[in-house]
Image (cartoon, rainbow, N blue to C red):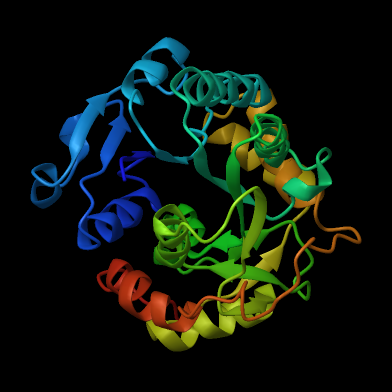
Length: 298
């Protein structure tokens, strides 16, 4: 089977590539900068330099491919949904032009809303476009990535609390990117499914932010708190790090769009539950990143 993988150096993509290599597949990997591939993986893949927003380049890079793992590239522009639309155009062009009959798409919990969830609306647009192609497609509706905590790493090192705009007692799915990759690789390699499929990837447990803070405190050995701030306060913080107005609203929308009466289309079952716990991830990954930081006396 000839399999192509996008974002092969990302939080999920790098694990997809490794899983395929372990399975005996030599994947074709699409990325802007092949030098970003780890040295140990370069000889195990066929790397193609490509911009996912360039539909012609993506089509050329996926010629002869049987199955595709597609991740919409992150947007840093003024109009993120327009960027998602461009990425969607690229994957549609590649699938239709090359007769690719099998796609695994990294989507998100919340895409089932179809609108009103910020950047997630862009993933919903890609889902809809792929559904219209009459191919075998699996949409991975992923929970909140553990690795998103690294976005507040400087604050954690300084002993500051995590800051969020969601209710602190609202449970949500938390998931390890490596677990998402394992599901993606299994879907890419399996021939026992067909048609349109939705596969939620909810991680090991639904957690509130209060529970997250307690788990991180125990796993890292340092006191980690959490506080809810206003939407405007978060908006101001995002502007301060250089985000455009459009990007700020798209990022905020991923939280504000899911905090009122949202229920995922697929509930937690053995099919949607993956093994890695937040405690295990925090001990293995977050604790070393905080090891050299001064401890808070709070």
